[in-house]
Length: 622
Image (cartoon, rainbow, N blue to C red; front, top):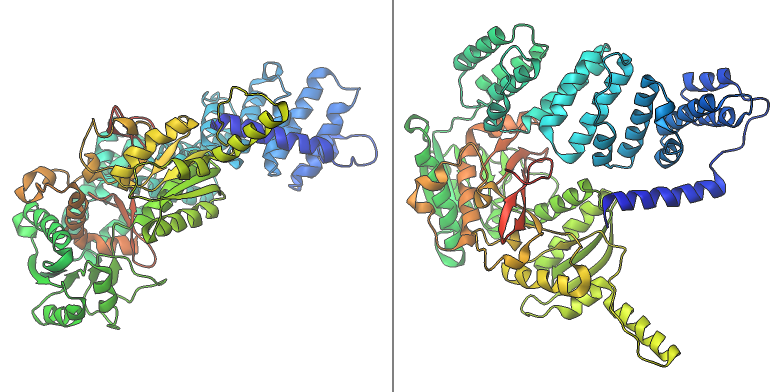
């Protein structure tokens, strides 16, 4: 269901409810008074102010223009009273052509506040597309850029969110608010890679926003020592001498360069190199070695490799690695191996395990990095929420893997306020998914209604089944073979217009235009490595013969190995600076409070049988 239609429907329902019970709460006694409305506003009693302005708008002694201005004030008060639907309902009754320039801006701002409360970022930006006049009041200009920043943040467009916060800062005079705005600006820029920050800095010094981009790029130079970093900062000061960036951002950089960057001398690589996980272990090893050989010779860290095919031997091998001089450990890879390692109560050196483990916290010095399907399912929920969807249809395979994916999606989706309207499971070994799809789309009920109607009338009727209309999108968990069959069958069952969002598992990892020709329109999240997206380390993809494997399923594990090696120097940086990110081959990585590396996926959709990357704003990348 289109987002605009959904929101309009919501407003209509709320308006009808309001008309029946609460469009105008009980009016206070006496004549309406502008002073009473102003007094209510001064006390932040916005509902009372709205009631009084609505009474003024109904008073016969005022002109039509004055009554419209009172409605504007009432709508503005309702938007501040967290009654967005009523505010928009009232705003639609106002003809902006009869308002002054300042009132027109107020009219747009109140609508933007209401659309933001209804989490419709696109409508916020649509309402605020026109630049405000330079003569506008400072408070209105501040509010304009604040709302645009919030909308871009909701859409995940960190660059434009930062730009709006930079503009907003010119209208802030409260030190605490200014400091918070600068921190939000900085947090947004830290989401971008150094490569992106450099490419976007096309306005020369001393442009203020270019200065922010340049400083954020310096902030990404994790490997530099204090002296080299100080030289870059000195150069930045010369280029941007009056820049408003707080000194504390620079102090944090300098402190980080001396205290937090890890420089281990020897890595122990604990991987299954024999047995049933041998191919997976070899792929991770190849990724680690590719990153090792791609790094400058003077920065390479000595690596010793241990075979942990037998989980029962993980602890003895870990002890052996420590005795042989390891001051950083990568692995194990299997869940059984990680579980065995956790029998140890303390970890004397930083240890980065490559699988997920249950529990709310990890022991000190232990870090977790995995290609978790549950994490991908949660990000699908977040993407759907950003796009304004509310009602999901979930289609997952039978079995333990499908249940894990479904439960992870459902938990996150409900946290965001969405609902799962319908759920169906399919047998992944089959080719025909008619029965579970008809259940998912409620087509059997449509058939039943048709039969009942024919029985009543007593004659055959022309009939076309209709799918249920109370779902906004399908969340699909499937591997390439199943996804290539399910997508055209969805179309056949009258759901061609229904958006499909999926995890990376629907994509094989290699362009296959003919095989994926029916996948057009499917939106999925994956890693930069498989999508050929730009990253600071993308050159290593073609620099090593070790990466040329025939099994595309192993490509993602090679990327995991490459990121694991490149992460080592910055692990403590990520731990101590929660908003920092490492832009790697598996995604944009950050470390949470439990020392788990979370991946931000890259989004793409199939078009012409091949994936097309999406920009942060959701459009195709050029």
